[in-house]
Length: 361
Image 1 (cartoon, rainbow, N blue to C red):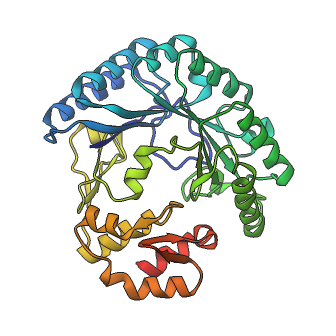
Image 2: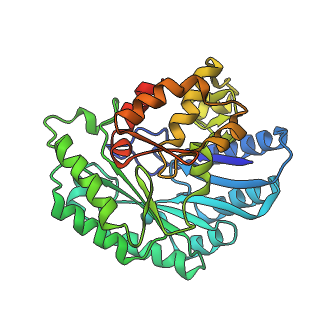
């Protein structure tokens, strides 16, 4: 079983962020949030050990130490966990303290730290709430000292004013910390964000952005090989939770804006803490079975390993026969490779995954 828990509190709203969050921490709302989580956990009827738990946000490391303690205790006691369960938690560097690091290390074994950039100028250009890149290294060392070895970093690239030299500096700063995992996403100007409303905003061209993507893959290849379009990891440190989501496994989300998938239906909780607390029903994504199979197949092609045909049939209970014509076209166009019972994206296919998605859907 794979679980996701959304912590909806931040200490501000970054100008590029399109994820749901409350831009401040409120103690009384936190108590109500925790009480509602406890209620929903107790009503959850899937009786099997947790294989992966991902705690995202928002900023899960924002709450003060006593609130963090109660949250982690609730998670620890509400479910049974497999002996090798992967328990991940997102972290913003500026919220970390040695005391929090020790508490987190008592339950969490994987941390994903949102650095975004090691350049104060670039952080300011994207409207990051904290523009002190030195805090990333400090927070990283706190977590390592507390005993957490599996720590990943999140970077953004193709930022306003960024060139290849600035990208290389960011990668060097990240690799110097010796993370086990790296996520590197190009800046997307999401509708409704403050950054999208800025005019004019000088961002790298699509051609330069593609060059940056290719450079990241080659520059990190020896230490952190690419295993998904925007994710890189040491061998055996790939994020198991994300791998499960990309390859069609069931996952269940708790908290406002959290998504769930039971193998057939997908649903999303309301992106509002007040509406979620009031018990508003989630939005259901019910589509024809054939479309769902195409969607599952498409998501697995985000990964370098792609799909074993037998694996897809085992996960979905269906063959790929309905997609064969489309797969053949994508193979002929050089976007997919079919070999020895495996179908995966080529390097070109990973870069132009959106074309694959459009063809399959």
